[in-house]
Image (tube, rainbow, N blue to C red; front, side, top):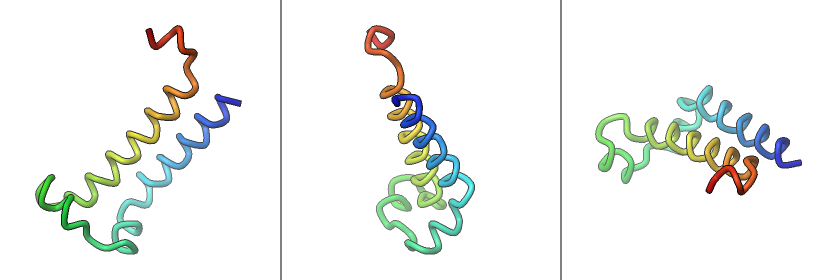
Amino acid sequence: MRFVVFLVALGIAILILKFTEPIARFFGVSGWAEQSFGPGGTYTMYKLLALVIVLLGLFYWLPPAFLR
């Protein structure tokens, strides 16, 4: 079951990476991201979000003994 959650998280992250531009056009430009990351910061924010989703899925999947 944990592996399935990881695969779903990975799939969501891949979709975010593939459709970053349409997502940014749909939700608009993030003023905070543009100010924090510079020009193109909205796209960077979505790519970092995808990375965080993959890492959370990976940490959920791995056994606790591996993370010690």
